[in-house]
Image (cartoon, rainbow, N blue to C red; front, side, top):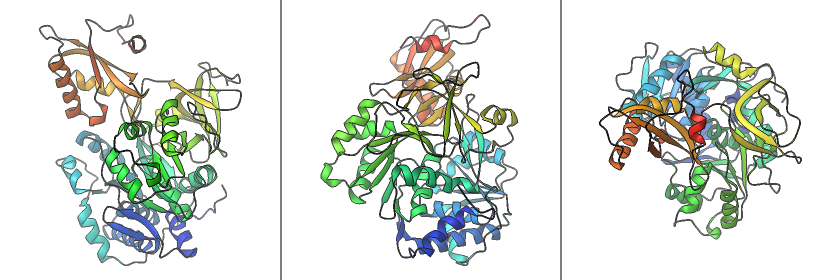
Length: 505
């Protein structure tokens, strides 16, 4: 990566397309229509001007809790162009989650889709000066000029934040620089995916994910491709509709979604698809899922691993060299190593160790969390928290987590958080949550529950406990299975031994 010192990521991503003569080419197709690169450039500048008119200053944060649309892209890039730091917020969270992130980030403005507004009612966030629904944003944009001056940022300036969960469930504001966005495109999207101007891309992962942000914003804009955005949740029907009608050539998914698509009776005929490459990340792709997808579509899934901390994929399978059941080989530009429990680097194939990454897109810190920052970002190396092994051919295979965190549908879930929700139910004395594979070999939460005296563990109570967790937390975190026990296995000091529960399955 060789970027100039004076550099603005938004200016780069927009202007490279205008200077290449793509002003009239479709950049985005969302639920309300299509938007050319020229129109997007104007919308980005309008957004930059609107933010400045609101009194948002350079290096202030704004929060974006919007469903995927071209306006999401324009607002994100408009903030960056103005030197303002956008914080992309997960649209699946609870009011308490949002209050924590707004207070932690000290966001001065919140931009939110109307269906999500109810989650922000009554929140106490002293730094928040503006709450702007999407419809009001459209008004603001329509009033602003179509040209804006870019803030004089550098490649090492703070650019944007993404929140990453931790083993305690408390999210961490992960801070990225202006140089990081284009870095993921140059190192992964172009050489590994072979993304090009003629591509039409569609990401089931949303823009607020690091995975989705690269898939649907950085990568296509880096080469002038067209992108399909979808506000609704990615169900088999909604995904098939886009695959058949919009004819994307690149599809980005996660293993849980691929399993649902393959199980759907609505799976389209191969002749109705126009795919040339598919990717998977977020959780390990089971071998049989990859093979079944290729049999049905004739297209390989390039399974890989990325993280919020590294921004996108740093180990991946390659076209024509896919080995299902593995995560592939390191992406050029990233160096990886495995470290044992004593801190020694593992050089022998087949041995399990913690995966650490050295690459130019690593976040610089967790906001206001010094100890966690020091634990994860250790000099040039970033700790992933994932266990891996490699074989004699250089392919890396996932071996579980170093902590108790679970990956559910590609999103981290803290067992501590789910346990905390369960024990607020009147019938529950204690609870422990572990990850268990379902019939598709995908990990989902399972709860072991000790009831208070006088309660019986029947199916009705299981359903009630599941609903209780859905009411307390983001719904995807609920335990798919519940087993009642007389007592939980514990150490002499009273700590729950989750590993013994994992071995029960």
